[in-house]
Length: 162
Image 1 (spheres, rainbow, N blue to C red):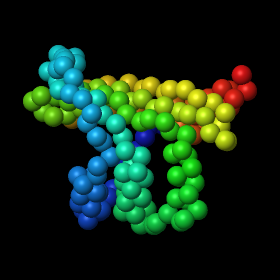
Image 2 (cartoon, helix red, strand yellow; image 1 turned 60 degrees about the vertical axis):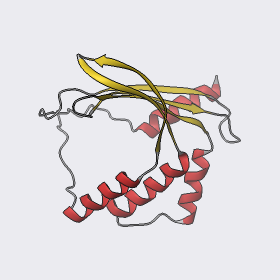
Image 3 (cartoon, helix red, strand yellow; image 1 turned 45 degrees about the vertical axis):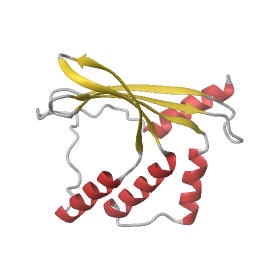
Image 4 (cartoon, rainbow, N blue to C red; image 1 turned 120 degrees about the vertical axis):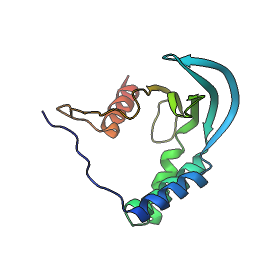
């Protein structure tokens, strides 16, 4: 059984630049404050949010410039824009701890619309739960492993065929 290992440590300069990029990012837009809730005994603030696709693209480009020290080509940027065309809406809800301001739950929703290339539409929803902050974690890599691209490709292909 393999264990995931830290592959690359960022330099202090990269870390500082990434923090600055993320702090200045306007990707997330809070659209509504919802009633507070308890998540696993923790009092949380609860918000609805949208993700701005234009700002997301800018964030990806900026992070890539720091992490990979490269820039995307015009062709790659055009392909990225084309892939965003299929996304109808992108958002969700987040629960943030009132005392520690850490995320405890995130619900992501992605609306997928039909395009010329993909004759399918639908909605993908994922819920992420966070707990045991600052505790050691060991992640066993499953075998065989499929990338998210492979999984989505299979999902979209099955939706097209049926």
